[in-house]
Length: 194
Image 1 (spheres, one colour):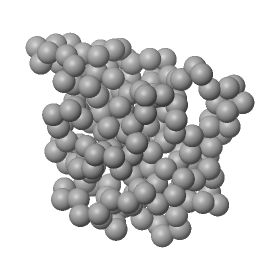
Image 2 (tube, one colour):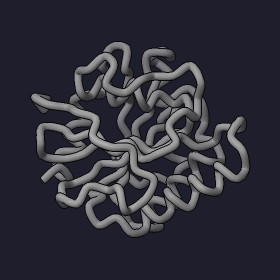
Image 3 (cartoon, helix red, strand yellow):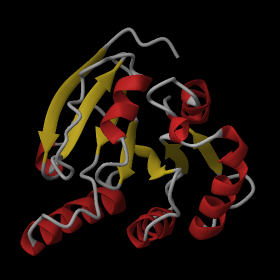
Image 4 (cartoon, rainbow, N blue to C red):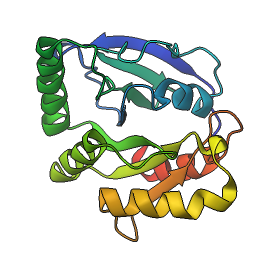
């Protein structure tokens, strides 16, 4: 995928702010600190389009990025971060549920998990939630550069087992440091971009 344009468009808190052009939307969901911002920046060949934060839980809205004038990446608030008030968590939960349940333009979801660790309870819940709503899910295991290649298979099997992935479900090992998995991720996304 050749990226000719990638621009931040809007931070939406509900349907009133969602774009109305009907272009395909690829949502990016994952725990706080899973490396979502780094994933987006690497995929789009930008260093700082999405600010990476030392403080997890910074994204609190749906952040829309227009890519090549043809589709959106939608950065979804990270989950599983403890320092957010219960009220904020509930508000996010309602916003996300409405988005995933009702958004017609949503064509696929990239679900990011950390390759180094077994999926968390929240990771499993998110995966079940997405499959419940029938969205195509591309699972991306980040931070692949942090473990040796000889351990890839073992870690992949844990993710496949814990998330209940089927044989034809996409699972891509990814490193925003060295670009491992970038082409695979674009290939997996391609059918949903038109």
